[in-house]
Structure formats: C-alpha cells, structure tokens
Image (cartoon, rainbow, N blue to C red):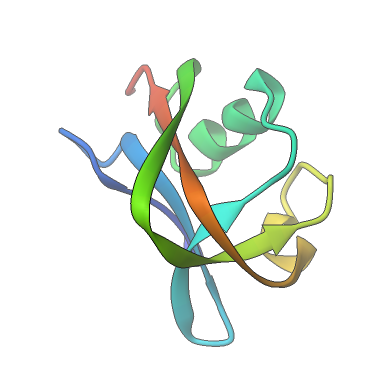
Length: 96
C-alpha cells in the first residue's frame, strides 16, 4: 500500500517503518510500540504476522513523523508533526 513501508531489512517485510506524508518519506516515532501496531503494519504490507519489534539508537538526530496513539487503516492520517529522535524501531513480520 502507498504511504507505508519497511526499509533496511533483508526483505520488504523487515526493517524500519517509514511513512510518506505530504510527499515525503520519514521514519516514524511513536511513544508506545505494541505488537498490535506492528500487526497492523504487517497486515497493510501483506507480510503476515508480527514476529518482533526492536528499538535501536542512531548517533545523529534524525527527523521522524510523530504519530498519535492510533492503529488501523488510517495510520497515515495519524501523523501529528515532526520530531527529532535518536531512536528508531525495527519491525519484523513473518512474510506471506
């Protein structure tokens, strides 16, 4: 689906969540990450079920989309604004 992708992993079903908002791709910042949220991402990408969510740190500050605490098909409508963060979240889905 347009607007959501996982990047930087071994397949299109593994990696850092990015969303396209107003024509621009950015990693996503979400205060609380749950397997339910990861499950929605995997479902949207036709990537099976979520296997893991890991949080990693990067050295330089990066710009992230800040999401409200919402799940479901309207994830791209949940973008609240831009934040700077040193953390990103990697989602691993099972694949088809």
